[in-house]
Image 1 (cartoon, rainbow, N blue to C red):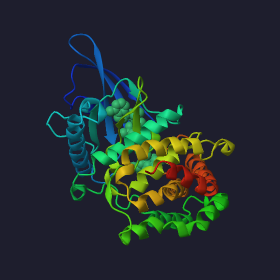
Image 2: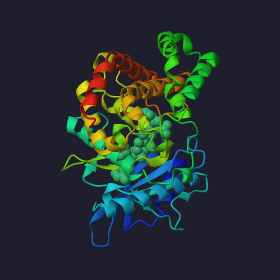
Image 3: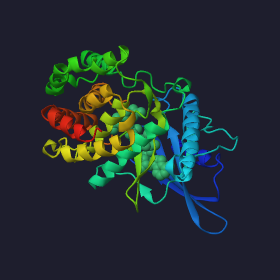
Image 4: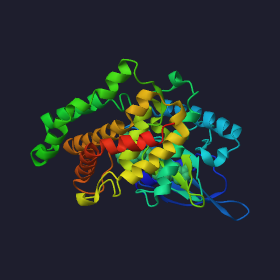
Length: 370
Ligand code: ADP
Ligand code: GN1
Ligand code: MG
């Protein structure tokens, strides 16, 4: 048996799952953690599923503190969802405790595991198939922010320091170009030039934050479309998932990253760039949903920078993919050669298109500000 399977089997046996273990398979399309869906048979004969995840501890250096965040955040969300008459069993993630009652299991090889109730009759999508789903995800991410608006931000551990510090991301990119350890830079001169031309955009949000022009909130920080579960029946964004990066941050990070991922009609790694653009109708769907649930408490400066946030978050993600390509693909999971480069190219294509559509995006936002 290989080590991965051994680790997995040990993990399955170390949580308080209900029923007898039947089988499991890798699940989902996340770039960071290893996710499995595990099936159990209950004494009455019916089955139920759980999500079991191995936390990527190369990316998240302190998994125990990270799990402390998730425990506190899900507890807070549960209480508020129940108070609002919702279903906390389905509208937030629910951790299954390990056999020693901790929220994680650490195996003998140093891997950290956690388990969640599987949210049934809902799913995630890689690409927006129905525009209303994107509206729903906007509503869900806006509500997520609203529900956490009274969470004590100072108690949160910073799971990845400077996660959305675009200046530092840009410096890391320049360093990767300079070192060029894989000898790949000469093949991506156009992409490097594209990035360099936009260096002046990188400090804009951080400068505003420093000057007190934008409020620090508790934000999700990884609001891609496949991090919200869409209910099969109602089409609602029933649950925001992937809470590893919930930290103090800017609303603009969450808004911008959602547009980056969901307003692109094509896959994030599409090679045919003629299929990639920023679809304004999708932008409108998300914006309407997001502003419906968060519009009332956003400040004028936050509202003003929503269109720019889409561009800068897409740019940041593009340089992160390009940096990882130059560094030899050590951060994001890849499934083919040049995968991170393909991803960087779609992001840059989106950026270029957004630059042409800044005014249009502004007009859309203005329609939904009351
Ligand atoms: P990563 O950090 O690697 O992106 P995620 O936490 O987003 O991992 O999980 C990967 C995928 O697993 C999600 O996109 C979703 O499809 C699925 N998933 C995660 N948690 C649950 C859950 N509680 N119920 C059902 N599916 C889930
Ligand atoms: C990663 O974990 P996942 O696949 O939801 C990444 C995000 C990127 C995204 C790009 C912790 O998200 O920051 O925007 O890939 N998460 C982390 O698809 O780095
Ligand atoms: Mg995810």
